[in-house]
Image 1 (cartoon, rainbow, N blue to C red):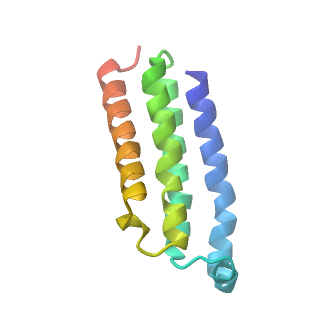
Image 2 (cartoon, rainbow, N blue to C red):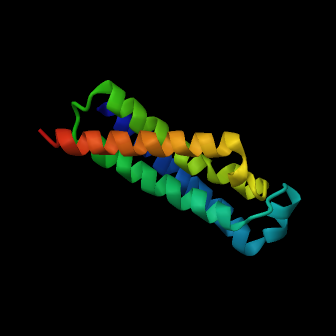
Length: 125
């Protein structure tokens, strides 16, 4: 599916741009504190997760170009939301205990699990 590959490429680009946040984290950590970051290691997690999720989306999109739209939609949702979950965690200590966060996490992980198992069952070609 072309859309899945395009989303993956965008996620890779976001991951690459977040490399600049990694430079800030190393060279000017006080800048992160100024904008309210309380857990700077989450910056690394969102950076790496966008790179990984982008590669997953591209890989599945290229391996299974005819992936059903519902499976692609679940995969796109999961690959976008999973890395984003590290953003509130960077700013709000203990956010992972809040119901809205836990609900969104479970939903995102379910979307990834369902879509990737679906893709594995379908297989290429």
